[in-house]
Length: 300
Figure 1 (tube, one colour):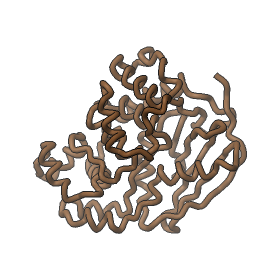
Figure 2 (cartoon, one colour):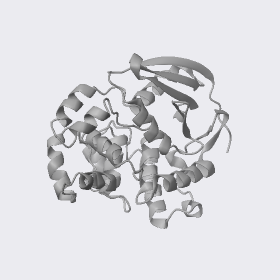
Figure 3 (spheres, helix red, strand yellow):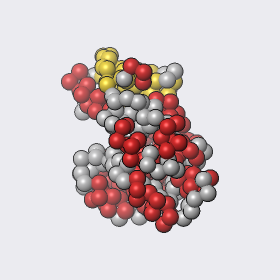
């Protein structure tokens, strides 16, 4: 497998609405960073991304008090900088307006203290929808650390080395085409999960499935649920981080249920869903708040 370069360097200032909770966002991405593909170091998130002509390295450094994030890009074709900007804004949820989200969720006395503590909490996105599906499949019912280990193994064996990587980032996560007939079982992945990844990879590669967030989230979710090995938790996780649905909600998630239990609330899926009705259309942000409350790092 050949190496790909990353080209010239550029810096872009990306504005956002205030407030902006940088630390929870960086912590979330740091804890889930795929070895070789992404890292968080010195309050900067770095990763490799695919482009039309190869690859690029991006680095995102938040300046929350100044109302912007600095994007540093090393890219082969300067015409593709807008592509890097779109990915960066999606990763850091820079187009969100925290005010209406805080007003809506703050009406619930359960969430009000969390809204105050994590002012401007953002919804971490993804650089690539297929990568997020692989992450969800491999992260189901295992710890974040265990998922990172397997994902790093996948990237090392199937990814493309960068000719001039930076820091711990030296690999481009493999595209869907690389997975369609990959012997994933040799990397310690169960046959059912490997089959699910290969099935999704084939659909993405053929154009049958679009994980860019442009298609109807309901239709994408139905397509994912038709894949053996993908259940409601995984589909909602993809809907939340890849499809950018602000109302996606993981009612059966362990971290969500633990947060309910700690506050003495009924944590059955039905009761969680019932209470969450009042959080629409911002249930994905409520999920992020509940994960902050839980703080165990068990959600991939």
